[in-house]
Image: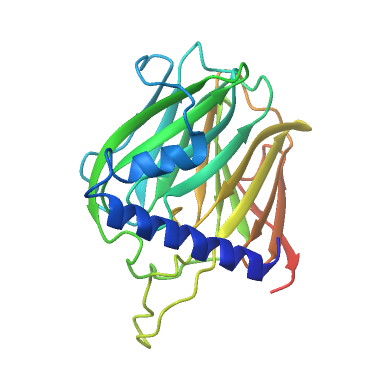
Length: 269
């Protein structure tokens, strides 16, 4: 997708979110009622069985720009979820990420760090392989996560990738060094708005098979990090392919030894 189309899409999301916010006082269910109608129409949503799936997030986050959110999948869900959307209802861009999960992958948990702009529901809607929808949510109190200034830069360059695995090989954390600017931040040195610049797509394969594919946006925190937990050791090599909103492309392969790989970067800025 070209940079101009990505920015237009971001603008459309922000406009849609603005409509959600302005209508929240009068629409039954607030912003979520509009999001649900847009993405799921009248399809039935299961909302009861916490053993099937649940969302874990802090009720009050100490860092609204990097709030941990975990999606947990029970025995009945593992290997049966093919797609999932993560929403933060009251964020300027409420769709945090859309995930396609590899067929039959026994994933039991996926963790993110996200920006939370104000008190809101954080919810996941999963579609199972038989076409059913399941939704779970958590409530988070926060303020200003999308406009929080960038953190001080550390070691590395944009596109560096770090893999970190548990000793038993059943969990893998993948981090991409990237500013992931939201478009709502102000440069503390100049006072000028910082244009949006974010990781838009991440594809992970494990042992040559699809593991998870993620379409993401400005609600993911700076230096996007994803942690995947599986019932079985995650096969190697693990290959990451990613692109951002300026059409830069990054790739890295992890063979289970060193925890860091410097991604090959390319594309048009």
